[in-house]
Image 1 (cartoon, chains in turn red, cyan):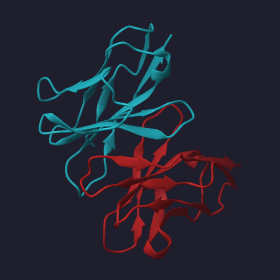
Image 2 (cartoon, helix red, strand yellow):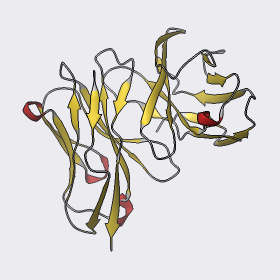
Image 3 (cartoon, one colour):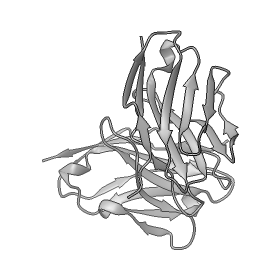
Image 4 (tube, chains in turn yellow, purple):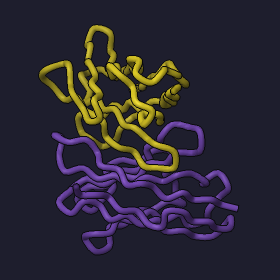
Length: 113
Length: 113
């Protein structure tokens, strides 16, 4: 069965520090991969996506993610975190038919001043 | 930027009552979805809808749930007889084609008392 694992439930980083949020997936073929961000009480905003091609993808707000097929991973990175990045981040996997996405359980990011 | 609009943003209902959650997807999108997120848990797939019929539904989407696209613009989720465990944030999403990620609405928080 398909699954998405985000092993870190909470992460705290200092403002200006680098960030990496981990995501691993289980799927028989190359999936469509996404990262979404959710601020408290808000909806889900798409940060970036990977479908094919260059395995390093750039997204909004200075985020990037790298698809590593050998590790079944799609980790999200940002070189320098801003206080406004504090939110919950969800990795998601879409199947080829786009009938549904599978979401990870999310990683809550706190940013220390 | 086009948005998916959901109304109401918050609805409180008594157990056993029917509720209808409304969504206006992006106008040229073809695929429509409902997801829900129980407080503190991951986002769960409920149902996908394409070409005026359900494409796929989850185990959660039992006989108490139904979806409709009555007029070519609205996409509704009806819960016939709400239970306490239906309390959650419900997200509508739409998709144009496989080159894009979902666009999510900001959600309707349903509280069943």
